[in-house]
Length: 129
Image (cartoon, rainbow, N blue to C red):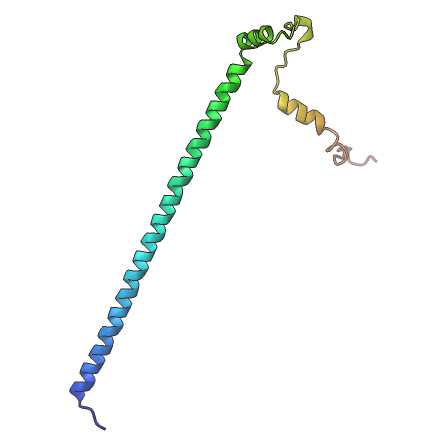
């Protein structure tokens, strides 16, 4: 069975055309899929940002409520309303601390952790023992 060169050329042209169509179709499909994934990631980011804004709003609200509860006028009013009979501390009962209390307490609690590991350095002159 002999085929003519014209038919072979047309067959090759048809195969190459089909290959190019499949290739460009797969590139188009990949592009659409990638854009869809980008869209999904953007939507997830929007949801996370909304959740983050909501949590930040709640933190601000609780901070405001705590500040209002620590207000001395509020504490005095609650003391009288609840008839607790509490009195403010005298000046000799309170001590003002100038350093950060959290750092001071952490250093006090952890002071024994590092003592055993530290070896003192002794400098000696040359020729002496």
